[in-house]
Image: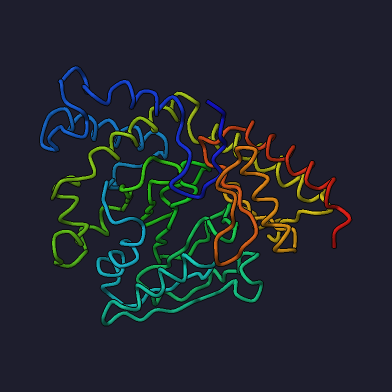
Length: 363
């Protein structure tokens, strides 16, 4: 079987070792005679899966005891609604940092929640979201929380340092770089992340939330209530058993590899390799300001839509898949998640160099 390098932004590449273990255990988990997809979410088998997954995630991210960990469904998009409903309860106001498409989607959903004022305190629109906006950390304490998208999957920007806002908690969408670079959990009131990029298969959402925020949340329908979901340890209804199982295996793999700090080291090496090539190329360019560049999602262009199309076809012919850029920005995008090997970046650059030799005279 030919080696395929999957640059997709999500669902994304998973560690080969994890997939092989899933394959070995698929028909009979722990010699139970049942697949992990068949075991009861009330069984001791699943209870151990969930307990180990949470424990290992806490180790990886240094999550303090005063934070609850939830394994939910609905994707990060559901958190665009749940967070306002649960947390915008005192001042009825949310401040957003607008860094691109997913921040805008979060803003749109928050505006649909009755009685809540939504404000953009800063925006990267003037740069067409090719750089992160400046943030005034002297924000007046008139909001329930500030929402920040830490890594912008489409635009290819990321916050390396988390801003501070006095006593206003930060809610961070960390969907595309969770576990890929080190952040201090205590800088946040809540972190949420869809799993299908750096954690596992689609269908799981991780929420890490400070317990005092949970306790203050209002009475809401059960599946929209952090308080009720925490009380039931994420099993208020049938949780995404298989996705949690896979995530737990990924957490074990990450610990065996050296944890988040080792992943960040590798991701910096992979991204530097590609950025260095892009900055020296006469055909390909990175549209993102250097100081704002993501380690995880790297968009690049030729400046010519037809050339972009030709390169994507060449890449596919060379088993480099998932490079087509998001429909909103076009071009190409290489997503270099934790499980993506450096060999894939090296092969990509080799194919880009070949393409550049053939097209460098093309305007």
